[in-house]
Length: 342
View 1 (cartoon, rainbow, N blue to C red):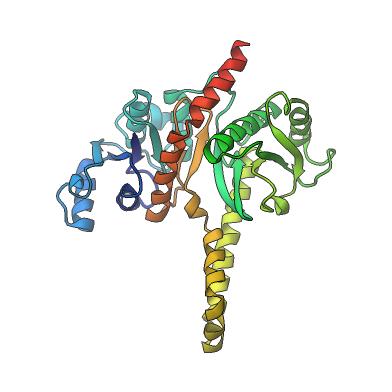
View 2 (cartoon, rainbow, N blue to C red):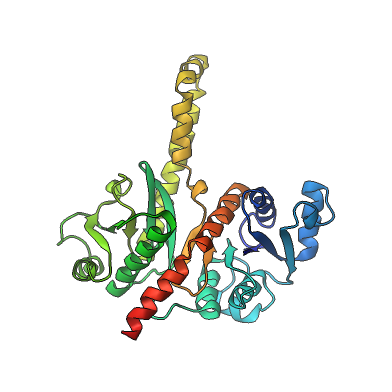
């Protein structure tokens, strides 16, 4: 297996991508190919590890040279069409040509989604691919679908999001009949805007036929109860929800840390509770869940956070290997293309 990594994408690239790949390589079986400016990557390898070549660190670390980078400020469609030798476009083409099994990038989100759709292509039968982000929940995890790729949706899109997410969760985590909830301002059928109300009716009507274990409307405060596996919404609402959750997590960790360090008495008093405190911090750390999977395209694509550090890249690389091993994309293609044929 070959994991293609956009070494130049993200706020902290290429430092974070290189360090993340080096940390992950001994924890996976796959080869990692860093795509980007070879001269810059080699200089960083020398600076960080005192090696002239990345292969000296591991023979499963490779570099694929490119001369351009898609910047965060670039217009997505123009960037994909004009910057043919960018790390992102080259990564997509290598994936399409079968020279890699999964592509990871923390670069320009719009360009990544445009490139995945135009260069890799949608699975037949899927109207719009979407980003599936994994978040911590009580004694488990929550898949948020869509968390930022489709700001304007139709009910059919949310139905397909639920279907794709169910296939992914079932095959990757072995969850039988994962529960699916629709994010809303109340649990009643009559609550919400037109999109949510129409989507509710469509999910209720089609859930049995499409093997979706739909449990109804879910309020944001109940999403992390541990009773829900998948939370479906449009990309605009999902992205706001995602970033709010991440912000609250940071607030809790910061407040907790400052409270413990307030004075000598609070520090001493916290000692017996340290195992529980560390467990709480670990449970709330979204970085350990890696990036967001771009479900609905013909090959595995993973969107890492734009602000990803080396730790997040490490976990995203490990997550990407599992994504490929569990063949979730193949399962989606079988199901959706089979429906089209019927």
